[in-house]
Each structure stands twice: as structure tokens, then as C-alpha cells.
Amino acid sequence: MNAIPRPHVTVIGAGIVGVCAAAWLQKSGFGVTLFDSEPVGHGASFGNAGNISPGAVVPYTLPGVMRALPGWLLDPEGPLAVRPSALFGVLPWLFAAAKNSTAEAALKTSRAMEALHSGTFEAYDAITRGTDAAGLIERSGQLYVSETPDGAQGSPLARAMRERAGVNVTLLTEAEIRDIEPALAPIFSSGVLLPDNGRCKNPQQLVQSIADECVRNGASIERGTVDGFETDGKCVNGIVVGGKLVPVERIVIAAGAASGKLAAMLGTRLPVTPERGYHITIADPGVALRVPVTHVDAKFVGSPMNMGLRLAGTAEFAGFDAPPNWKRATLLEKQARRMFPGVKLDKVTRWAGNRPSLPDGLPVLGRARGYENAYFAFGNSHFGMTAGPVMGRHLAEIVAGHTPGIDVTPFSPTRFQ
Ligand SMILES: Cc1cc2nc3c(=O)[nH]c(=O)nc-3n(C[C@H](O)[C@H](O)[C@H](O)COP(=O)(O)OP(=O)(O)OC[C@H]3O[C@@H](n4cnc5c(N)ncnc54)[C@H](O)[C@@H]3O)c2cc1C
Image (tube, rainbow, N blue to C red; front, side, top):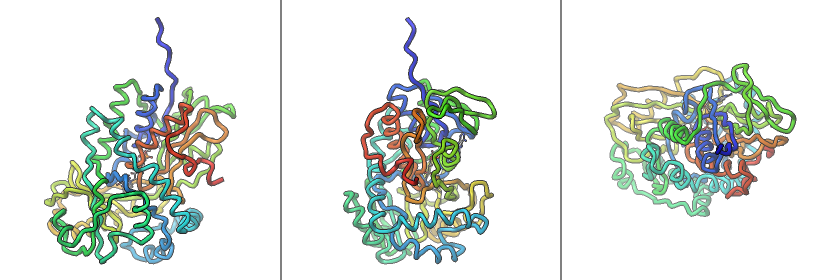
């Protein structure tokens, strides 16, 4: 007897969002092919800080952020930079972000973030249980420290957002901060522990392990850049990969920061901007952290990983293809010395990658307007390692024609039109 062929989905992009989408689509009975121009997990998902944060309900676009912007931009060591060559292109994005930084808009964003982030561990559990990937995730807690007496808690609005969402927050004295992380310099006067947050011990390995499991379950992974679509106006019938047409039944665009370009080919214009971040990873650092530590004032994270200590952060608007400005990574070395006085910086590797960011701080999740068989899942900005498995779960529901388990209106692909 011939087996009934499974309905099929082609996923463009094998970062954390693409592989989680693939895993959930398989659970819903779809066959899956993943396409990526790079090896699996070599986009933004390669070099992030690995924070997995169900309690991430505070958007970056808070009231006051625009007042702080000029100071950050003028400070060569500040957490945010815009390359002069990119300024003109990024101005509309920054204006749109400014519009979203009212208290009312930020509260709406916070609720949407909660819907997407709060179930992250459960969603990871469901797709990694019994696999190598499960061992890479730990509910370790996360520490936030500041050099000012109230800085670690954030603004009253940030506190109210965490309280509303029921996020567990433990206030710490200076002594308690050092008890948790003795390697920290005695420069921090406030700290909070978010005990229900956690970490990934190696983000690229996690993406690879989920992809490997998808392959064991019948998925295939193809190397190639998707640079066009063949459509009949209602359906996408094929993708163009290296000049060759590959027939498809359904597609998902999960191409991270490059997704805006692909969505535009299908007639949906979305302001996805590459927001570049940097990391340094220090092998044999001479200090051992138990939990990821965010320096709230300088806006970077020190994360214990299975290959060493990683410091990651900074936001730079430079355009998609501009070469990295390694001074931003060198800055992280300076910060490592200040934050962890015992750190040894003999074996340091540097990395830069593009976060896929939209000006309202939310991703895009849903069906492409005008197409019956094309879907979008991208734009998780600073939170893709957290949101990835939840995006995948709800994307699979949408592709299967079910009502998604969360309100996806805030993530609508048409919200900017
Ligand atoms: C410095 C830094 C620190 C971060 N820290 C954290 C953190 O602690 N916690 C957290 O939750 N998030 C964090 N993030 C954010 C997180 O890394 C991203 O949101 C997430 O990795 C995005 O995943 P993605 O799958 O959407 O994109 P990507 O990982 O970029 O994957 C997209 C893939 O699509 C492929 N692709 C693109 N175009 C095409 C095409 N035309 N054809 C075929 N393939 C294509 C790319 O090669 C890539 O592999 C951080 C980001 C940075 C930069």
C-alpha cells in the first residue's frame, strides 16, 4: 500500500526561528525542507548571549529612550551607534521607534512580549525532550546589576510591567550580588535576580541539535540562497535558488534580518532593520559565572557558555553589508576587565551579527497578505532565542489552519500598512 504523502512546507532560514518552526511543523504532520545560504545556525542565532527569558516583558522602546538617544550616540563607548553612512536610511526607523515609545504603546508591546516569551521553556521542552538539545538549556536564573542604587530594577514603568505579568523578581543587596557571583567587581550597588529566567549553554549548538532532530524525523536541509519566487498572484509555486526554480507547496520566510527583502518580493513592505550586535567569547577566562549577568547601565550581558565566557551586546545601525567595526568588540574587552577583575583575555574570539528588528519591538508572525500558502516568522530583535520555540508552535498552528493559542494580532504582517 502506498503511504499518503505528507503536506509539505519549505522553510527559508535555518536560525533558531526556522528550526523551531520546522520542529513544530513536523509535529503537526508536515514534511519540511529547510533552505539556508549558510551552515545551520550561522546568522544572529550563532553569537547571541543565550539568555532565555520568560520574564522579558520590558520593551526597549520605553518612554525616555529617545531623550537618552543623543547621549548614547555622542558617546563612542555608548551602547548604541549609527554609522554616518547608514543614518539617512535608518532615520524613518528611528522615528517610528520614537512613536512607539509612549507609555501606552510600550504597555501594549509588553503584553505581546509576555504572550510570546512566557511559555519559552515549555515550548523548548516539547521539541527537545529526549534529545541532545535538552541538555543545552538550563533554568538557571539571570542576574541584573547596576552601578547606581536603583538602576537594576529599571524605571517604575518597567517594574510595573514585570509586576503585571507576574514575573518573579528578587531584590539583592550588594553582599547578595557577590554571594551569587563572587567574580563580579565590587562596583555594583543594586541587583535583581530573575530566578525563573535561564540560559542556553551554546546557541549555535542548540540550533544545530534541533535541526539534527528534524532531519532524524525526515526533514531535509539544503544549502542555497533564495533570491526570488515564482507566483501565480495567489500562491507561491516555486522559490528561485541560485538561478534554479524549486517547486514548493507552502513557504515560511524565517530568514532573520534578510526577511524584509524577501517579504517585499511578495508585496509586503516591512521595516525590518539589521540591528548589529557584537560578542567576544573568552576561552579559559579564569572566572566562572553561574548565571548570565546583565550590566543594566552599559547594556551588555556576560554569559557562561560551554566554550567559555561570552560578553555580548551593543546595538549598531550600520546597514546590512557594512563590514564590522571591531572597536565595538574591543569595547566589550574593556568592559569585561571592569566587570570581572580576575578575567584573563588571552584567548578571545570576536563576532558580529544582525538582529532582525522592527521599530515597534515586535516580530512578524502570520500569513503573507495576498497569498494562500506563504507565511512569515521573523523579527525577534533582542529576544529570538527566547521567542523562537513559541513562534514555531504558533506558526505551525497557523499553517495547519488552526486558531493560534495566543492573540497574534500584534504580530500581524500588515500592521505597518
Ligand atoms: C549580540 C546579540 C545578543 C543577543 N542575545 C540574545 C539573548 O540573550 N537572548 C535572546 O533571546 N536573543 C538574543 N539575541 C537575539 C537573537 O539572536 C535573534 O533574535 C535570533 O537569533 C534571530 O533568529 P532568526 O532565526 O530569526 O535569525 P537568524 O539566526 O539570523 O537566521 C536567519 C537565517 O536565514 C538565512 N538566510 C537569510 N537570507 C536567506 C536567503 N535569502 N536564502 C536562504 N537563507 C537565508 C541566514 O543565513 C540565517 O541562517 C541577541 C542577538 C545579538 C546580535
